[in-house]
Amino acid sequence: MAGFSHGTRRHPRSRGRTWSRTGPDSATLGIVGTICAVAGFFVLGLILGPAAIICGWLAMGRTWSGARPVPALVAVVLGAIDTLLAILWLAGTATPGYGFF
Figure (cartoon, rainbow, N blue to C red):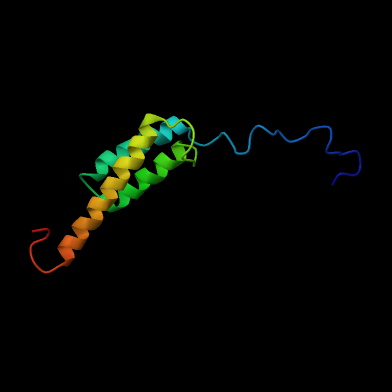
């Protein structure tokens, strides 16, 4: 609809912003991811571990390069450990015997 005096040159789209700023910011996502990772060690590790990884990765800006906020990196690392331990715990309970030992 560029006709009828509704040209696109008058109000060009902002080039500095590619997403909406209405969502949670990276600091909040990093803190939520860290809380999920710590809570995942005690309950629901198979669910809270991947949630912590996702929150931490989104808080880092979906990239591994550049400056990484500390809570986001902690969330990713602890979430990965938490997920791995939950999978090992499930594998240990699925085998005949008493678990790991």
